[in-house]
Structures are given as C-alpha cells and as structure tokens.
Image (cartoon, rainbow, N blue to C red; front, side, top):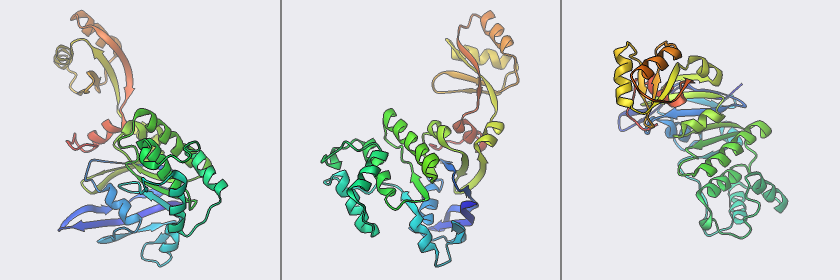
Amino acid sequence: MNIIETNELTKIYSGRAVVDHVNMHIPEGSIYGFVGENGSGKTTIMRMLTGLAEPSKGSYSLFGISHKDRKIYGARKNIAAIVETTSLVPTMTARDNMIFQEMYLGIKLTDKERMELLTKVHLESVGKKKVKNFSLGMRQRLGIALALINKPRLMLLDEPMNGLDPQGIAELRDLLIELNREEGITVLISSHILSELEKIASIYGFISHGKLIKELTFEELQNSSRKSLLVKVDNINQAEALLKSHGMKELNISPNGNINIFDDVDIGSVVTLLHSNKIKILAIKSSDESVEEFYLNLIGGGNGNV
C-alpha cells in the first residue's frame, strides 16, 4: 500500500508552476528520500500534504483517502510534520513544551509517557533546562518527540539536518532508522546532506524545477548508478590532461581533489599510465556513483544547491 500518492499534483504561484504535475508513490514502511535543489518544490509539496496549502490542479491521497474526501481530516491525525521550522517555546522546558503540544492536540499524556518519549529521543536527562539553552540537535530531537505525541504512522521532515554538527546528524539519523524499523513509521524526508540520505532511505524521489524526474528504490539506484574508478593524485591538473589525452573523456573532478573516471578502463592500465608519467597515486579504488552525483547527472549537471 502506498501511504502517499499524488496525481498530477500542481501548485501555481504568480503564474508559475512551482510544483508541476507531480506523481509520487510512497510505500508504507519506507523512508523516502526527497532530493532536489533549493526551490525545486519539496517544501511546497509537504505543505500541500499537511493541508497548509491547496493544490492548484491535480490531487493526492493519504492512507488511500483522497484529499477531496472529508475523511482526509481524520487521516491527517495520523501524520506528524516538521516543515520549515520546529515549533518550540524557548522559555519552557522540554516537559512543558510537550504539555503545551498536548493541549494543542487535545491529548493528555502521563508523566511516565512523556519521559518515555524524551528517552526515545535521548533527552531524558535535560531536567528543568530551558529549550533556549538546548543545542540545535537537541531542539530537533525535541521537535520529533513532540511529533510523536499523537503516535503517527507518517512523518514529514523538511531539512531536519540543516545546521546540525556531525554528532547531531548521526543522532538524528539513528533515531529515524529506529522509528522506522521499530515503530513502523513511514518517513518522507528532504535533506541537502545527501550522503546521510544514502544511509537511511529505502526509496528516492528526484525533483527539479517543480517536476519529479525519477522515483526508484535503493536497490534500483544501486543498479542504475554508474561505476567509476576513483583516483587521488598529487597533481590533479597534470593527471586530468594525461587521462584525457589517452581517450578517457568521462571524468569528474570533485572539490576534494578526487578524480572519478567513468570510462570503462582497467585499473592496472591507469596505474601504469600515471606511474610512467611520474604522477604520484595517493589512493585508487573502484567506486559507485553517489546520490548527489546521480542527481546531478540526472538533471544534466545543474548549478543549484542540492
């Protein structure tokens, strides 16, 4: 069963389609990695799914219920969303923020249930510390604790890793995997940190300029990704010129100085070529195309920030 489906979903602002006839399919129990440049339409789609914006054309369904059906209001009670920002009261403690959210939702938890949620997001020891004194990672985890109050079947997370340090990213990543595997929560997540999406997503949707270009599972992505030979050398410019002069045209120079050779070449011949021209090889290995590389190749290079 697809927990989310969209049919030609379109949103027009000022005469421009910021979401352009999008057809998404998100299976129940999956973690759907939503990939696209700034302004590609990811946030607008999440806003429509949560009822914060109305489609201009097309439709969508949640849990098999059309957004045009009055039952959609009941269906949304099974959704938790953090879109654009986490709503927290900075002058309150974590516990008081939870009580405030319970009042808004019309739910009342016991202190034991609140502590269980705080423990789940690893905030059991914050005590009476005010949220304004939390790190960004702690705030994001508290936001997820608030989102879990209504025991959702589906979570929508818009750039939840933005601004987090490596430890905060790792903690959030592990938490999402735990919620998905142990609680069975389906997750729709967008993130600019594509290396992290690679570690958690079971299905991907690639969107650019409002159009959904491709949907594929993790396994399909692995099979579709180009294989390359990754080489790190002491003289990038000389190595690039040399490789091109010997017929290797599909090269990509990464910002960290690695050369990815996508041509079908033998690793031994590349080593011999570089060595005979006195270019020192610092590292060499076979590599699969990353999610970011796949996306940029999909849209033809692109200049937008993913």
